[in-house]
Length: 162
Image 1: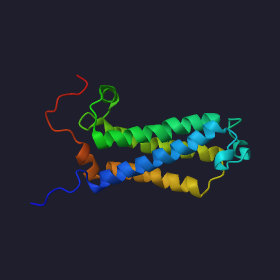
Image 2 (image 1 turned 45 degrees about the vertical axis):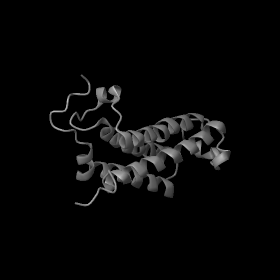
Image 3 (image 1 turned 60 degrees about the vertical axis):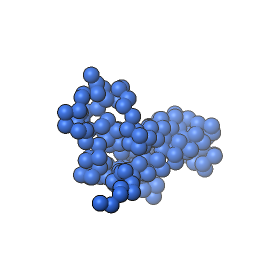
Image 4 (image 1 turned 90 degrees about the vertical axis):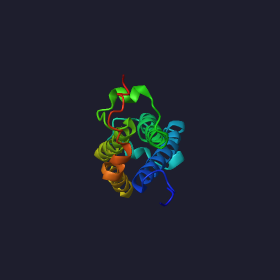
């Protein structure tokens, strides 16, 4: 019998990497928008906001930091370490799976919604398409049988919500 080299299936490792890269990239960009709401630190012209309901990039930066930066980082950590936090279990709609699986799908949906809303106000470009594909990859990888199997809780496991 071969020793197990990696404790995660390739799909789960890929999911963690996608979430980490997304989270770090978004957190860095968001921090630049929060520090300089005129967008000059990351070379975003204010003209991008011409059709948007924002006068500068501060609010989008905060939203980007929370939902596309910090959240995927917490989800990546939760997949890696599988903490037994009670509060996410309380809202987990999939009781037979560890809550981090549902959280990973929510991260993919959050990115999909973020980009979809953004292209309502900004002309679509290469990065929009890239992040739409990225969101799709998170969702598809999250739904693969190997990924679902990794998050499946053993039969007869106690209900974590008590």
